[in-house]
Length: 509
Image 1 (cartoon, one colour):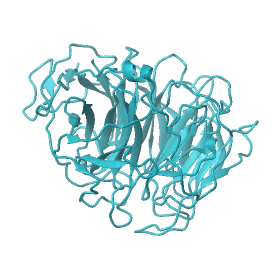
Image 2 (cartoon, rainbow, N blue to C red):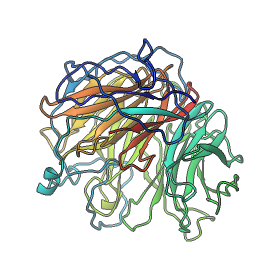
Image 3 (spheres, rainbow, N blue to C red):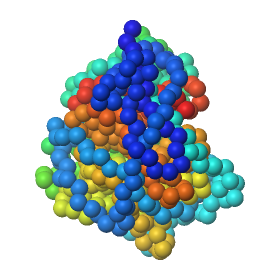
């Protein structure tokens, strides 16, 4: 049986040194790294150690990141550089949960914004309540994370955790673009099963009960080719069988095809209690390298009465976004309809279709030459009753960035660079990893060797602290955050492209 290893991330209140990795069952390696442990539901005592360094922040300064590669998939450049914490002003907004949704919804009008419109008034941004403000008490202790192998998986690109077989445990679905594999791994044995072998060149997926039969189906995009903006981009939903452990060819139903479809997400953008599928291509149809000038079509698909038939499509925007890399569903204002954040060469935009609101530019993004500009990943997080928007910039970039409200409610938010810690950043989420009501930023580096990095706000010093969760073992190209072992805290699932693996990091807090 292979030894079990742990990654110590110490309790702290201020600024400390970066944590080293520790082997808890034998002596640790000289470089402080950990090795995978392919056992099932591992347990053990967590250890702790110092972490974090401090640097001067860059506020409203685009910085000078290294030029990222304009390609999707595993890179071949050097490991990312070390950096530390950065100062940032506090945000002012309503409380959000780890996935960015507000806790108390109400009902909006069901309207669509005018395509291409620009916001002339600020988005609906309610003040935090006393209840929200009092619910969060910052905890100086930060959990340790233990890495466990799920599987070897060649050229992985995207992974998502959900209960595939209805047994109450979070399984992991994974896809590979170049290997044309779309599979799932059963928790806790991590036995592998196919979802489909009838499609190819996968790039993204999102689970939802499309047909309302009680099991979880899967929307996904295939036929992806970064070098072909004139064809491909097929969008399907795969219908979950009664027993996905015996039926490894889920029925596929076509929804649409938009060239370079890159992100698909489910979100209830009209507040009717039924989610729509959102589709964001990375390049505008017919655009060409290297700059890819030309807007993409952000499209919504309501689920029809017969989801195996034709799907209506509504274009939400076809003028603002170029080189659009990320799409995140949030509840910005606490009403019944969910809202949309996008990351593209235009920075960060907020779309509120349920309010009929014009798109609002929240973040300006990195100011650089096309296509290495703007924002690449985006997430919404909460610091108690205040909130922030987190990004990686520019496209496939080096910078971890936070946006917070500025002095003007009609202008983009204040941009703060936390560090240039990524060689080629390609995954980002926000989540409350220690349950104190203050979200952390979780970012991945897909560069050769890779890294998984957490940025944590420290109220006493008004700074962000950098914590290395893993370095050199997973070339992180995609992450998800779920409770994988049912112990009530949030764990991290990561898929590595050039490292050819899927892992989960157990939260031992």
